[in-house]
Amino acid sequence: MSVRAVIFDVYQTLLEVGPPPDDADARWRALWTRLPGNTPPPSLAAFTADCEAVIRREHALAREQGVAWPEVYWPAVTVAAAPALRALDPSVLDDWLFAHAQLVRTVRLDPHAGDVLRRLASTGIAQGIASNAQPYTWRELEDALRTVGLDGACFDPALRFWSFEQGFSKPDPHVFRLLSARLRARGISPDETLMVGDRLDNDVAPARRAGWQAWHLGRAGPVTVPGGSGDACLASAARLTVPESGECRRDDRTTGSGEVSGTKPAELVGDWQALDRFLARVVEGYPFAANQSTS
Ligand SMILES: [Mg+2]
Image (cartoon, rainbow, N blue to C red):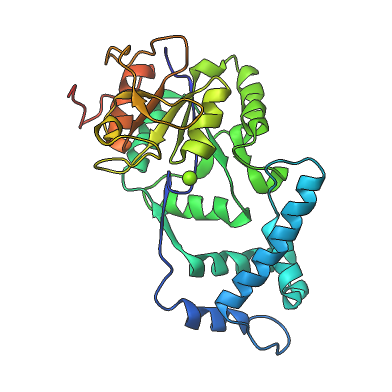
């Protein structure tokens, strides 16, 4: 089965997420002084806790309304949690919240993602995003792509799902139905679409249920998969099946040729190099990868 569209998760897939910077508290106090007025700054932890309380209320309200997997709009959450932010114009608030986001964790482009994105772009294949995200996410991704000479234009604007824009999030099946409908308008069927993500619950399982192929991205070395059993989940291009329970096992029906076998869409697992080799087999025109091997 060929692949004609690739949809990427963002966090812990395209972007690595690391711990907060060492000077986060000092930078937080400096950031707070940019607000009008002289409100004393809460601690960074207290601000986070206040925001989480708002999120719990928003989620509960949305679920009462029938939204199974709600998503909040972060600027509204923060303004509700910290009224001092109300004085900021929306664009200034966006800048302020981007700066805040860099204090609670660090992000950088996965060292191998740029090569794969560049090779995919050279084929003209449709590339998109399915991300549980907030307004700062796109800026984080574009900044990261710029470090390797890429930009966000490689992702089709109509194939970018940002949860904050929709009010619901992965693993809601509507995420995948929405993207499937837009792909179908381009003549691309679900089984020609590959989801690439780090989460079985948010990326792999719902993509599979939508009839997509799904690549479970692991880091170099063994991949820990909930319910998995050691060697069956090593970071190679081995095909695995993941039943609805999330249990992971090797699919002995597969041939190792990169082709999907059986009646269900295949789930694939491995690191970026393994994904690179897989794409070389299933994407028409994909450049031969320097690290390609059949082992
Ligand atoms: Mg992720």
